[in-house]
Image 1: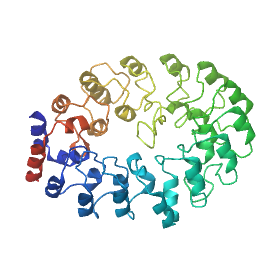
Image 2: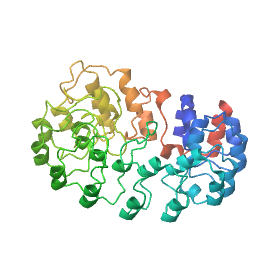
Image 3: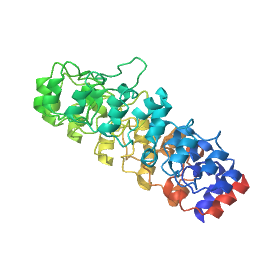
Length: 410
């Protein structure tokens, strides 16, 4: 089996198998595993006895969120002092005994549960423990049965702004996308909202339209993290031009917004305003809709033509981690030549430039590459194996006897 032989040639890859392969108790005992990876593995043959055997080794933050565990009331209560309660998945929250939880009278437990999106939230559940919930955390939770009546019933308990308590990281109602947003709701509580960049202005759940932008133009946070990064606005070329002096154009602003009507023409029109390079994070995306720089923005219409047009502007590091480039064997080889140029003015011109080892450090971590046994073999002499984590589809090709052979060879 080619994949098994490949892993035998690069034994540091064996550790990454623990993220996806179906380990049982015997394999785990032989493997001397990385429990950080194993704790999130849904394919493990989980039993209460297995959990108890290695109780001090698990990463309980990851284990708490693992839907593959045999969740039951008994399992939850058996390890009650270990769980991260805000991480429990739906199979676990359906098994909760609320009488047992209520009698624990544990503020930290209710603080964590208040943040859990998977609880079976109802009006009666909220009312039944009204004096135990952490209302700052509840205010940010999108899974509550949000209605205008619910907001009014607890008007004086909600955290309306971002972080009502200095020690809280919860955003409050202003950043909660799940509220029944309308112009009427916004106006009704206009003096309670947090309007700044990291508050209402960043909320993708509002009924964004030209009227809403205009009515509260003086209240919005137009800068980075605010309107400029919000993908839910009704983005058009006209809107961008109309407020061109208000936007934050650089990183964490328009340059990282996936939802702009991106085209080569739009990029060229404002070429000198964009933030082309992420100078801090070197990461392709933040959350499910935010990027940092233009080079890391996965919403652009990526093509060889686009890269060639702005080859001297794009940051090669950010491109290497961007999942939306047209990755293929041929494109990776072109990209390697592009990376090796001292003057990256062209993408397609041949060159004798040699790619830096840093290119493959970043490419190795890009999940959007065409991962397969063929690609692993084709670029075998280039991957940075200490940073390579085999994808789940490849891990599932391995049989139990393959895993046992790897364990015996360690």
